[in-house]
Length: 111
Image (cartoon, rainbow, N blue to C red; front, side):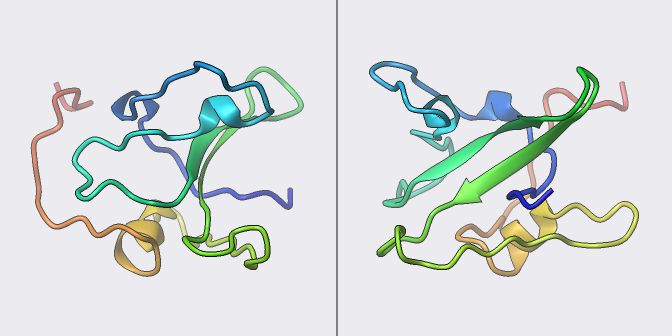
């Protein structure tokens, strides 16, 4: 599986539009990221890669390079260990975003 795999994120938090997009992956493009300021000037994609059965799906979040994305190298970042999401690396170590405040989840699994 040599694909960009980062981990599970909630897709419903992304606002997507499907108008005039017809290439594979275009429907996965993130056009607006709520809470991000300023809005990014690079392309990003989020979606699922489907496995060999209906029960196998792997989530990915691809962030293109801000300059010369066609010639920039592709880095696949995976954190290891049980219970360690690769989003931790994306959001705290080497991704384009930093999470700087804590807010309550309106859809917790602890209810």
